[in-house]
Length: 389
Ligand SMILES: [Zn+2]
Image (tube, rainbow, N blue to C red; front, top):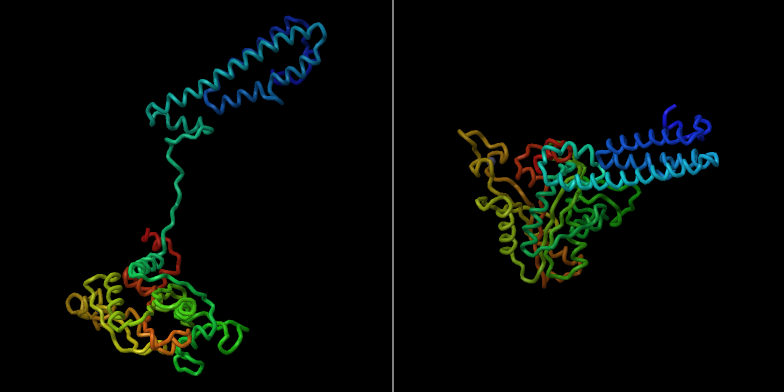
């Protein structure tokens, strides 16, 4: 029978009937106590020692008291009581020593040679936070390239006094078309294949996924009186089949400024400043006449091609594919806001003037990082995304 098994039975059952037998049994226990305390070299093991010996419920001293002392014969009781008391004092003394020792051990060792005891500390002192150990490493994510470019564009405009506005992605036909001077029978509506919402109403209240960020111009002008200078980044939707340069969802940044006396000069100057700030001061900028229902006059804005330097040729006269040999890359649609649009929002077109522009964030990001296809943005390929950390 092991010592621990003996502790669970009354003395009479394990054949102990004399004071001498008690004495030798306690000597055996004391021997075990010394061995255990000598083996407790870490704070975890010291805690184990405490539980084994002084634990309230199943500690050896509790078992001893319950099974041996309480059931002892009246003749043996004082002997067991005295021996038990001596053993308890010894156990408590050992525990105090061990606790002081392990505590001291940490303090002393922290000043010692790190490499020598790092492994030991790691395994032995789990309950003590050790600030010298290497930390847990976390995988940090990175901003998506579209987010990086959006933030860069926002910063340029914020530095010119623009605010950043937002609006709903589900719009009514009124805000998406009509208030932008594109009434129901206007030919421009058919240019944009649109996602309509099933059972989404009819007429000017019909619900659809916005095809451009321009409706936010209307929302913003309804809410604010001039001067207004704002840009509107956001997702837009068109029924395009996905290929290298088209996706059914893409990102635009709309911008507009309305104030008294805003001239074509301010319009051109602002956009040139922005394009040179974003694409580089060496870029040339040109405005080509164009048409949009909500601006008059309207322009397509081009910058000189960064691949061929505007010559249309790379290397030994090889045609530049990026600009299709024209030397120019289209980057923006823009124009002076049509007076009719002002009337929809209650601005007096005699008093106020302004300009508006829209650009494709996906395209800007492709140009900035020389990317061949839109696919990279939406494939969630970690090898691609990690390059932007
Ligand atoms: Zn080119």
